Length: 230
Image 1 (cartoon, rainbow, N blue to C red):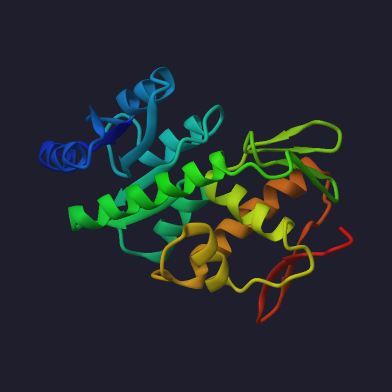
Image 2: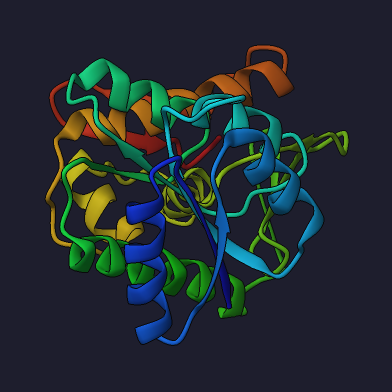
């Protein structure tokens, strides 16, 4: 699988490329945002992106915003900013994960494997081809969501995972920690705020596509659910 590494620091790109090669991946290099976006849109064999947020010509946030108009390829952000809001903004625009600089390359490899493993599981598990719940039609095999009227809703891999988890366990309340462990398929190493951001962004997309229908319910102090009768 090809993995795009985009950073304006040559040393970082070369370091990650070496680790990716050692893990059996084919690294593709880019050194500014415009180049990264061009490659990501043109090379359909790219299976994951590792993007620096602060890049010349086009920053990582803008790259993902443009990319998400036509692709749901997983994205890991590299960020030198440690403030929570910067991380949250990265998740909101459509990234799947983030790693703060300075980083351990082995940690990034672990994140890469986890995201690709999760994506592979989501693509390979063959359950009921379509699940209808409330105003939504969720297709597990094609990894797509649309409204009853047929309007597609573009979700990231994590957003789809959260929606599918809640939809297939309608009526059950999942805490943020449970959602993280089941969807991210990692031990809980981030704050509940990360899950909250993904749920919030998912909810906004559903509200926009369904003219304000509230599918995901918040159970304050407990977690999230989709009503069984939704």
